[in-house]
Image 1 (cartoon, rainbow, N blue to C red):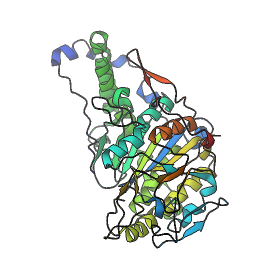
Image 2 (cartoon, one colour):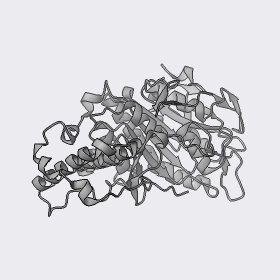
Image 3 (cartoon, rainbow, N blue to C red):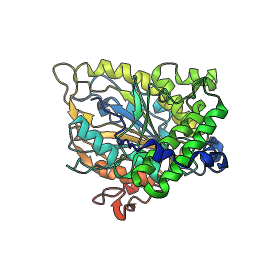
Amino acid sequence: MKCSYACQSPEHVIGRRQFLGGVAAGVGTVVGGGIGTLTRPVMAEQLAKQQKRVIVFNMHGGLSQLESWDPKPGTDTGGPFRAIATSQTGVHISELLPHTAKQMHRLAIIRSINTKENDHGKGMHMMLTGRKETPGMAFPQLGAVAAKSLSPESAGLPGHIIITPGGGGGRGNDSAYLGPKYASISLGNGKPPANSERPEAIAEAVDASRNDFRKQANERFNLKRRTAMTDAFVQSYDQAQQMMAQRDAFDLTKESDADQARYGKHDFGRHCLLARRLLERGVTFVQVTHSNYDTHNENFNFHLEQLGEWDQPFATLVGDLGDRGMLESTLVVVLCEFGRTPNINHLFGRDHWGTAWSVLVGGAKVIPGAVIGKTNANGTQVTDREVTAGHLFHTYLRALGVDSAGTFDIGGRPMPIADPAYSGINELIA
């Protein structure tokens, strides 16, 4: 499934003379307190006990719970892989995840997910918004909610960044009524957005003068024509300038050779190291996509290869967050749109399965080492503590210290932050 991250914001055209009239004379009067004050890097040591952050690993396509968090060895559905002991006494996961197994004392498993949804798009919508798709209504994704609720106004980088494999990138359409300020910035293959570097032909002083001119123009325009749409337009430009001022946040050559080696120099390893770098610099929400787990055939060979790539960089990141004092303020989530069928099909694959599957969480206020819920012996149904996407969304927010029963004020209308039909998983939150 390919998602479009193109910005849907409308463009506004007005007469040049009308827009520029009377602006030039005031350009030289711009003083401090503008965008420049937002561009100072915020380092990890200043944030560790203050700002809450989130990192989500999107196992796109549908990770098999039986080859990861809820193995069933020796059963007719279990497949060829063993379950191994972990650093958390009594908790076993698939042998395909030996590095993650050493970090399980810092993490928790929810083994009783039942969304009843087997469609890729609808399943991912549920998992990222905590709600079912509703015709005519759009809901903000977790990244937008986190950025709105947790990002400081003085942040110099966007609060909602998605790191994807492959090319592409740009602005997401995932913030709904919260507005484009909180929409995602997508980094295709971990690269910063195109055209986010000042051309060498334009001197820094000239660029600063142009930016001052634009600011004066915006202020004059807003005296009579300010709307929510013009505010969004200005915010987009401000955010772009902030990113240009902090391009080094995306530069992995600034990381030590040792760290680059620990994470691995393949794409996913680089993406995990970039995620750590962004979190250290104050980005509230980072999502890293690992694709594609849609294993309708050759499920076992694929998971052997794909989790072999995923395991060490993920475990390294969790270890670094813990060792650097960041894990207690950073929520870690490993999710996908659904699990995979216990039944093994004639192509040695597993199909879509929204009925009984697992999510991994950790950090922030999540109780480390916890296991919530269970499935039956061959993994075909939940037998204890059934959980759906609405419960998860509330739980994520509560783990971050956000009142999930609260509301956003959208144009004078209260909008529930999370689906009020659900509540969080109390036994998972410290």
